[in-house]
Length: 141
Image: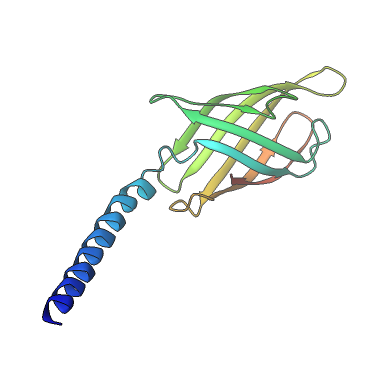
């Protein structure tokens, strides 16, 4: 009976140590999100007659520059002059596109990141081009 209790106690302690080690190995993986803008952002930019209200923006960070594409696969609009100001997490970028008639238009997008510590952070703000403007709301996927 004494040997059985010792074996059970050793098993419980071993399980507790294993569980603690597993928890410690998971915490750093969750914390390593990378650049705050990296990823796919899905949402709307209200009032956009040229491209429609739905928008997908894929952004990445190469260690120096924020790059990306608006509506990859359909419009393929490259993001340019992208900046991120850590004070307030303000994002700004431009993109050159064409409207439905083929006329060149330049988008200027500015917004703020919310829920930064979470993987499903959001980016909200305003957009404008030479002919129209509106608000946008994106959520990282």
